[in-house]
Amino acid sequence: MKTGIIGSGAMGSGIAQVLAGAGHEVTVYDNNPEAVLKAEARLKDTMALLTAKGKFTQEKASGLLSRIRFVPDFDALADASLIIEAIVEKLEVKQAVFRELEEIASPECALATNTSSLSVTAIAAACAHPGRVFGLHFFNPAPVMQLVEVIPAAQTDRDRIKRAVSWVKEWGKIPVMARNTPGFIVNRVARPFYSEALRILDEGLADPATIDRAMTHFGGFRMGPFALMDFIGHDVNYAVTESVYRASFHEPRYKPSFTQKDLVEAGFLGKKAGRGFYDYRPEAPAPVPSEDGALGQMIFKRILVMLINEAADALHFGIAEREDIDLAMTKGVNYPKGLLAWAEEIGVGECARMMDELYDFYREDRYRCSPWLRKNALQKAP
Ligand SMILES: NC(=O)c1ccc[n+]([C@@H]2O[C@H](COP(=O)([O-])OP(=O)(O)OC[C@H]3O[C@@H](n4cnc5c(N)ncnc54)[C@H](O)[C@@H]3O)[C@@H](O)[C@H]2O)c1
Image (cartoon, rainbow, N blue to C red; front, side, top):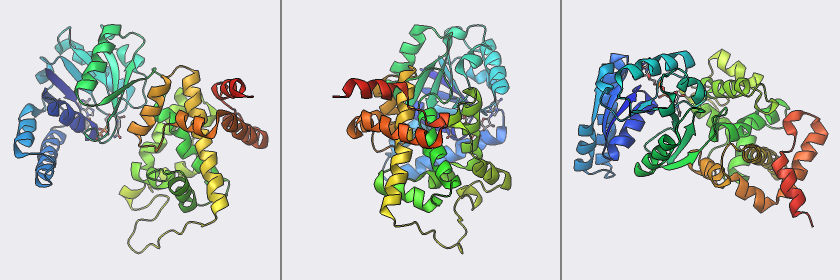
């Protein structure tokens, strides 16, 4: 199958590698000719590295390279059967590109967007034939991460979605269906991992190193929230939080933190800037987490129950199926367990009780117990 990618940045190049790896012919277009050259050189380097490490045979690497061409010419996408857009995260720019795409793409061509936080329905609305538009949300790095969220727009034809799901499977990825709502599954359900950690910090209950240790040591998460935010970059992480907050009509659970806003304004964007919550300069002393076990347990349980509550709420509002919510978090962001399975392990009644305890203390809407937890707690009560 002939496929096209728009945008040769981190995601576009990664997705191109996935599609070419699955045997498709891929044309990658970028409107910045320099980005096109850089992406091509980067892919060659990646293939050389994978071959040197013995992960790819020479044959596989050269086969993959021969199936991808990088172009600065939009019309080169004309004969594709599927085009995936992975350009800058701005609605007006994406809408303009989809409008132009319809002028060159064949009427049967499926059009997908890799947007993380914009409305797929709003992007589809720019098209004369929105029935062929849907979201395919890959995770970074696309060749490594197994999850792809498939998001139908309000206008998308059912058949298009069925085909999208089978394509994702053919590419060796795991598709999960998500409703077109802010953050889809992963970027919605993961919000408390950051926001509750920031809240605990802002309340002066613990420092970043102690909170990070609580989540890795007691929770088994690969990275703590502050190390992860520093890794993602505060510009990116803060923008997603703000966008989900705005798009959810100011849901208090998604409220951004002034502490993170301050880091963005100061240019302390995390690891890439040498400074974020942690100081990455060589002379900086290593942070020392508190060894207080009771404090660590309290922090871990508080963040975990907020995550569980978020997953329960996503289920309550039909954002996705139960299995897909758990798959999304284990395969999209490497959580050690699915959150709804974790809720069963702890006991849904206990989770509801923990949420009520937080709510009773703070009297803030952000700590309200999800109706799904409440309902299931009542059903399971002796
Ligand atoms: N980086 C991530 O972790 C991640 C994960 C999932 C989804 N996404 C989404 O994927 C998309 C791309 O993200 P990225 O991190 O690859 O960005 P990036 O900045 O690395 O790359 C974007 C590329 O798009 C090109 N571009 C911009 N406007 C264009 C236009 N009008 N026509 C053609 N090319 C254009 C740029 O020149 C650049 O090369 C965004 O929608 C983002 O939200 C990103």
